[in-house]
View (tube, rainbow, N blue to C red):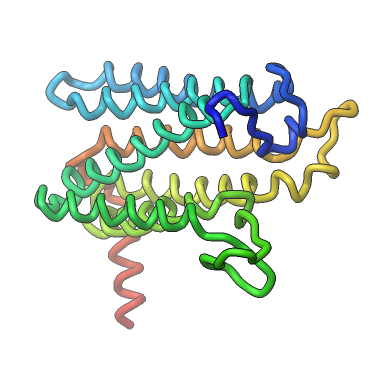
Length: 255
């Protein structure tokens, strides 16, 4: 396919190649832009010593994610699809490296290897196909399609958030709860993304099929905002109440 070829992946668009075929999917990208702007304002209120180039890079990527997704839901071509997915991929890789290094003090060499492994897992998950009787990598001639409406590729990111968030929380760091909340919101977000086509004929507003992709955008904006807030708290201890809850949970586990 050429980069100018249209892509029809979402309920709201259907088979309409028009620039305004996905008004809600387009407008809800404002959530990413708002998340980036608010996060920038909060960062600038912090002491200069508490800011770093990493913070500005992550905020900038969230803003670019909003613009790239907006372009894709307006023009819906293979080319704008790359503008949508590449910034998301970059954010995931850079944030994972940031979290491993700044939250967990993983040495640079191991951080690099873990990020490469994560990228490989994500690429592999994107290639998974669903077919009659299973999920995997079917051979030629097998009738198959994308799994969970193409959402399987995001499951490694969810798993990484749960693992990293749990480890950071276990260390008694303030960022842990933000990452775990982000993982919870992202799990709900992926569910709504997966249901977009399934509920397409059910969610109709004034004769216009809406789908659930709009919820994916809004919840993802919340997810990224929480991750940005976590990044601002690198090295900060969790509030005393959080630490007491964690110790209590550990005590119950031991018992």
